[in-house]
Image 1 (cartoon, rainbow, N blue to C red):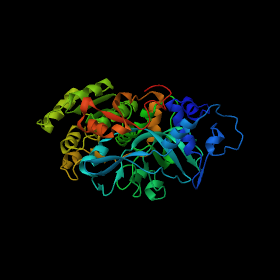
Image 2: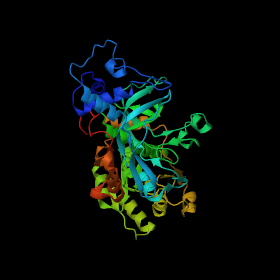
Image 3: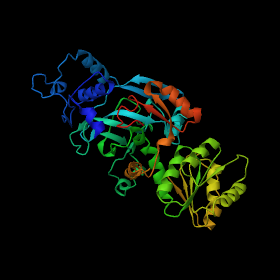
Image 4: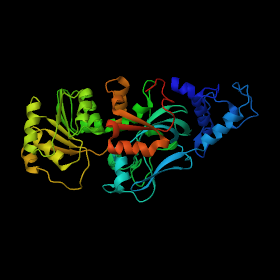
Length: 431
């Protein structure tokens, strides 16, 4: 409640956060076609009705604040990827919303490995950048407008954004497998824009209201955490599972957190970088194993089995390299499950006869579905702490530096967070 109270407080000062309130009030003042505006204590003068009586009035001249508000209400600074190694900051129009959408004043946007890959390669698999695209999809924001059909959200609500919106009508959507929808509109996946922008519109039913004690940064991190939750569900991780995780990058680490929450009794995580393994150990990994590129799969399998109490029954490959997928299969016990999360080369060589003869299931993971609520519950309940993953903070005006930090791992970067609004502006407690 604290965050919403300051957003809709009708007593204005010159403080930055109160000005942000006026920006939202200004944006809410003129309904677009198909949307409604609900006054939550905002002075009617802000709703362009100066002749109407209002109980909340300002007793001093407000010309300076009004000019600031007018400027901010038209400022939609946006990070746009124009091509390989061509990321620019530019102004974009503030979008109009449909009846089932909300307009969000974006707060925090994390940089994902896919964002960096689009910057450096211009494509991921069949998704090819052919026109300028707004980057970013790990995000949280504050509701600035609501469409007329939206009932569960109100202006001022802090929300996490599930970035993929399916058609809702195809057979796969009706079966609950909406992540496989052929008409999926996914943020920052060509040809669709992302949300590293000051104002962004999104389907209201794919926005998840954050409890007051959950920070905006944690809200943004629900996106990668949902990948980890989905991977563990696909692997059928449960009470007493012995899990091998290949790769201690951000996805490997959230998979570790999810596996712990789902009841795994023993977790070994591998990587080529000791610093990442140190973080994994800090987060609760039972074992860590530093790999050498020159080691054979057979030698590594022996180390895995010797380090753990036996062969793992679940393996999750978060790397996408051919060597890691092969290792996952060789190391998993007969009758176990291998889940491949990381995406690498389009075609690789796998020991299929080994897997078939030992009945090792090989399962793919593509994003997530029906996992955001679970991820939010894990964070809100305290069963999962994702705060340690955030290592760097940048303002949206420092987007280029933020991407450089994430790309090259400067300063031990794990998750780099870009703040579209000032840090902690929408957090009841500092992050």
